[in-house]
Length: 219
Length: 244
Ligand SMILES: Nc1ncnc2c1ncn2[C@@H]1O[C@H](COP(=O)(O)OP(=O)(O)OP(=O)(O)O)[C@@H](O)[C@H]1O
Ligand SMILES: [Mg+2]
Image (cartoon, rainbow over all chains, first blue to last red):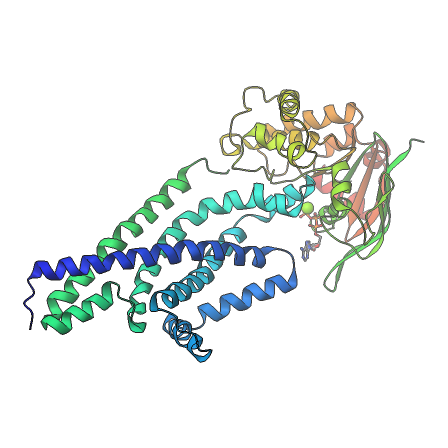
């Protein structure tokens, strides 16, 4: 059996943490883009588009992320395709993130008073222009803090991808524990690293919330 | 008789099972001012919102400059280029300065030249006596100032008809006057206006015709001189005795 110093443990965990960060960022940006599309379908005055978006959101919010990961990983095998764990992890987390961000952003769009739409309408602005110049810029401002806050959920969500064999921070923790039989040290370090990632994010979300609420307030 | 600019004929509007406008007809000539007064909930806001198609209605006809609003193929944007609307709650765009609020529609809707629109926006803000406030955000302005920006914003589209929905109702008594001066000035310049108001003194001075609504119908209408001195309907009399 190999001999692991505490430094070796930390060093190996840090190497694996890079994958946690990479997967989080990729899923966050991919999910953000896709979430914007779902949001658009959700708010545009078209019944079919609205139903499609709602169905999407319900499905991904109403099932555990773990099941989504399993499906993304094992379903392609039914069709004779073998997807690498990182592809399945990225795909599932992106789809999941998109659903939650779309729903967060829809709340922000709906928080814009009806009078703003009405004023824009009565100035003959077409619907897309109302959205683009009046509603979205205001919704964006209130969306920044909860969006950044959701990044914490994404980071923690990546831990589940260890189950389909993607070697990120949690999976590395399990592997190292199996080699060292020092679960307390290893998982203690893993937890600290998650905290070191998430805490600054949630702090900046809070800071953004205060800052953006103070800037040129309406009324 | 002046040429009719707005003609409402037998308008009916229901929200669900409740009919809130029950056959209203009125005509406003070019350059005339119509004032609508009446108790809360009588359908005044709903009536003027039908005029610029903010609210759809099922029965009757509304025409603005000959454009039929109750037409399934109505081009709402075309209609709204002719009709300005000012709201009780101002509804300025809080993320844009006063000047940008005024410039928004001419640039985004009419696709006009920016420098030209900007020059006009400065002139409009000067006209509503807001020189020096061009770069203020709505949150930095008083209610009366915001409402005057809202008026300038509507005027920037060079409308043929202006709709005012209780535009002084949310203001402090001291600032009501400064908004009314602006509206009076518009009326004197020949702007066609429909205004829902509780300012009886103002209605008396600027209106060509005063309409009293109650529970979705026009109970009585007359030029202000006779309306305020000789109301005929008992409901009008009761209302006026309360507010005058
Ligand atoms: N969107 C809506 N859905 C359902 N009912 C509505 C809606 N808008 C207005 N109503 C109802 O229609 C009636 C007329 O409302 P409206 O706002 O036109 O009255 P108003 O004369 O403008 O009153 P106020 O003086 O209080 O502004 C009221 O009974 C109101 O509750
Ligand atoms: Mg009203």
